[in-house]
Image (cartoon, rainbow, N blue to C red; front, side, top):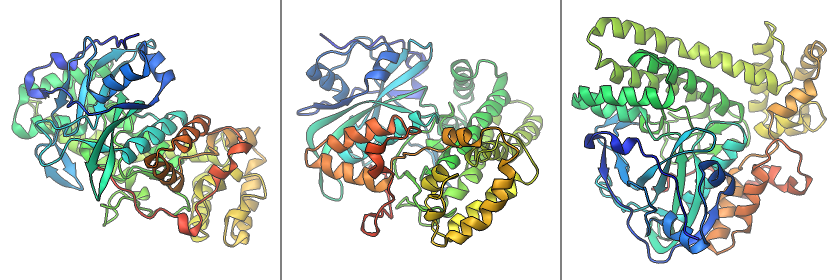
Length: 472
């Protein structure tokens, strides 16, 4: 049975200035590693046999209706503007309107050189492909907006990074791949007609209720404010929040040097390239505001009354920190079992976090264990927890069912860095059992799974992952 994908492509109908027509580069010996059956059903994809799917998801065979292209964008990378980036190792095959009525992109990542590759080889090695598959699907199961993984394929070819690595291709699905940097490139070039067309397209695709450029800015702000609060609530660190990695749709995109914290500390950084801590855990809300300001600057270029536009955009952007704080407080209230609001709640939460940082408490396990003696065991000095818990327990007496609230807000399982690294090393040796096990357990992050208790364990001293890498 031949693989069929019901393409309905809208981005390919935009002018040629938005992309470069580009087919994937074939690979030598594709082999299907994983297919996300649940996502395939949502997309209305009828799978073929394993070899047919390997050929399609490696880029060797183009299914009917595909219109492959590499998208153009620019972006600020660690605060410095790069005037042209674009899909340097990815090809958008096309779009599908799923059985749920949502339009999504289907993109091959690691599919070879494009006109935007610069000096890169356009390929990906197996490690980052499996990392993105596991982490993006884990984020989806946690209820956090994200790109998703449809398939992973070995290429049968070698990719040179710090040494020879097995090559792979990820099939990534997103509500779109429009980024802040997509708007920046047209604004910077003075291509105002294209900027207007892009704005209209983004509104129609993502926020049909929005009116004009400032309506789009407000909608993106709201989506990003909620997203960042969700990241913070599970201890997620994106690692490279450049404007080209900030999706207009409000989805988490580009899982390069990302990580979930083990021991809590607000200044935690994992990315090997973030030497100044720009994208540390606690800085993510501030960077989200900075990125929104760059979008505002781009959108303003198409508005005739610049002064009025600047005033309105400033008001929209300046409202974002308080909006994120509201989302943050609501989520962290739930994490300690609160559904009602009292004036002292923020101080109560902040006190717990301060004590966790001082006592090397595991972020995920501490919150999951609240209400049991296991929570105090996460602290190097359990008395530090006891000192906080007295006031917290008094606060809980005014709640109806705090245990149920905490259970629903605090996952038991996250893709811990050392388990992801162990999974990658096993896969490189041909053993995919850890990969499949991680996916199965992380699909139910809020469930008690006694057989998977080892995946809840923080890393031993010799297992700690100190740095993560983008893998390009």
